[in-house]
Image 1 (cartoon, rainbow, N blue to C red):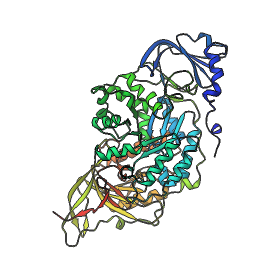
Image 2 (image 1 turned 90 degrees about the vertical axis):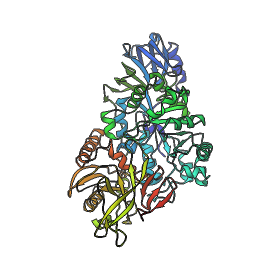
Image 3 (image 1 turned 90 degrees about the horizontal axis):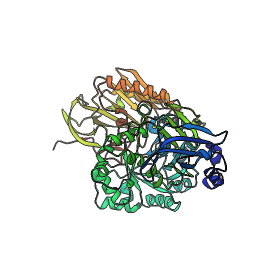
Length: 605
């Protein structure tokens, strides 16, 4: 195990710094930095207090008050706030770094200018590909960064045992082992909600190991059933949930003592429907937290991160101070870190943002651990990279070159048409619909037609050569095309969606050639791709470069007729067999409402 102090910007603990913090606060020692004449956003009391100063020592707040002149010495770095708001660094309570297609270092470099200074990350994407060793790599690079990146140990790989096959499986022993790592803050989202409800011994052992370590158990209850099944899930121990999509979902969770995490990611727009529990029903906002869950690199570069979520909450009618509480102190408190992050108060890590407007939330200066890390949209600090080994860069194993025949769905003998179970994509939401379509048959093969495309799940961890074929609706693709991706939550095999079997084979083989990522073929030619060589999930290139490649991919998708918002995010979740209603896995088509496999083709009723 690497030493924590060697892996991140040195920061003494509060007890180690206490004597000097007291000396600064009382004027017996000069501060390292003083921010003068700002409006102090106090998230403990929900106040905006003008004409206040902040004094910082050893990367921690030492003094906050109307006049810090007694803390200033000849070498104190002075920052003039000039009436700007001084707000705590923003916290993302639940997110997956891999969803940005970036490594922890490049993700940090992308979000620092947006004011994010703390992230609570669940690397269950890489866990499905590389197991515990992959989680440790993510954990170690996270600890090297100049901001606070806390890691949750993934709980469910596979997410639904028996419904999919992953590259590696996470065990209760793995969870117990990880709880001893320096950067582990808790257990990642417990996606196997039927397992918890049915008291599965492994799920309960993982939760118990986390609770015995005094850490937080993350939740993921993706069912609309708020009856006894939900009650059983809460009784099992998950402390939060981000899968709510309605006001009723949010209310049910906070009434049961969970935190309702309301997410605004690149494709998940769940804040507006739930925040009315606060703005209209008047519930105590302490039970609510803002997060992103999944943010695409293009969103990070062009729109923002947690500052985007806070602005959106305000646009939905939330009081700006309440919105800030839900992105700072509420998160810190939930993870047992209220005395460490989440507010501007003595002893806490000196994470602070200067902005001229609480509603527009332009991020002008970002201070993390007492150092200026960004100004006017530019990251000013180094974000060190982990030395990713070859084992993390060679993870796409198809076992053979695929051909068009691998993507054929044969029809029942003598049929001219068939009835198919079809996955229906819902724009801006993670759930899908279970649809039925009549599809034509040509030369014994079922044909995708109109709004229905073909989807295939290609096994890529063990090189079995396995391909599962089905149908999907909602992308609007036209012409002869195919898009393939090794980002396929959560098993991260390979998803191929297309209108033509030959293009589907070309796209799949191309990803094996480049070691993973996303590619789009049209009329036999590759028109765009995003290379993701690390676990087939991430690039260690800068976010701007990855975002540019992703934008070219988006343009290529639109050129093929797709108009969905952030369609790639929808594409990447089609194998997530814990979110209703229909999904595809390497074992077949899954009805997540019943956790049963169903046939792709059905006889006419």
